[in-house]
Image: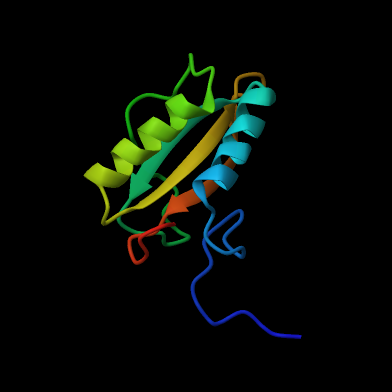
Length: 111
């Protein structure tokens, strides 16, 4: 059995290889299928004690397709390529964030 290389792990899905746009699209479809409200956030640091990230625009309340969300992710990547970028899903019934995952790390070009 091979162990993972020693590197910092961030949050959900961080133990997997970098997600492709097709895999990100499937995760975004899961958010939409469950009625969660998607949002995009960025931060220069991914330190675990940092609980608050800066929002990239308002949450996408009226998003109906994954392409809308992917376009916002791409716009955030081009503007803040030196930051960590994550997507989160808000549950309007529970009134909280129910999932999040990183879609861009500043040290790599794809993730």
